[in-house]
Image 1 (cartoon, rainbow, N blue to C red):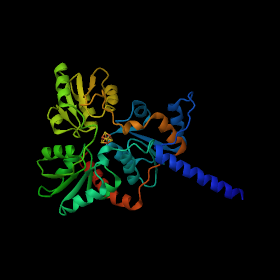
Image 2: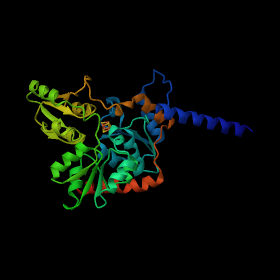
Image 3: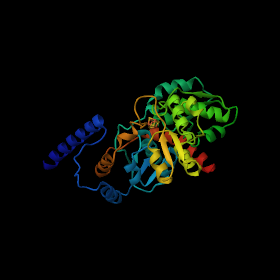
Image 4: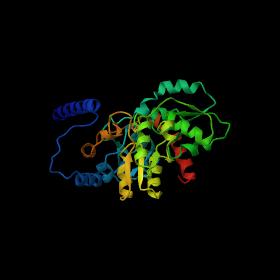
Length: 344
Ligand code: SF4
């Protein structure tokens, strides 16, 4: 009898938890304000054999507690090789899905389930499937910033670090569909001289930069290098001294002799740029709206408090259906193989 009551209570609790996760994206719980969250997170990591992987666009506190900080390619490589039992993915949903696809036996946690992505949302898989059917002889390359279902419809996944090389690894006469980011696709087409069939998707953060405001900023800082991520619009990329992935931008800031940089990507990367170059100045490129920042609202849903609670409670967990794992794994592994062979 006791056991039955316990079961009912437990089921009710689970339903409440599921409802709360669906509604809010995370479990809300009071945290003792005297707790040192950095210490608590370290303790929990040891107890649970967990690793924290954080994207460069996360808030500085999360970057500072992470075991590994990187862009999509580096994070996928880390997720594939970690021997931790639990991966806490401080990033957005598609990144946690990629980690789950590469390490299905591990528990993958995301501090806030509602950390989505406007670019991934701009490419619904059922519409992409129809689009793909119009080009039956084409190879499908998808940027990693897409859902697991979309990856399952792809032949090769790429990141902004390896997109050019992955396109170049295919025969010159091979037709290619590239999705979901039209700006990255157009930049890759230009770099490779290939005629890519592009899906018309975009990232809300990288599309917002104002060419006019950047021009004025460059006039005020004539010695500053303007560096941009290839998800930016072509008219903004045309002004750039250097175009590259977030890791590429970081490396450029380290290797360049310039002392000032105007940075056109999500502002989170500036934390690592400043740490690596304490004497250099980094200015976020201005967006076209009145907001003074260029933060990704999805990336910034994760906080140190939510990270602590998710590690403590083992929730929210990201899962991917088994058939999607099987289908999506192949194009991701192809990307990792090509990247490894090129030393990327
Ligand atoms: S910065 Fe853009 S592409 Fe990256 S997670 Fe945010 S919305 Fe998606």
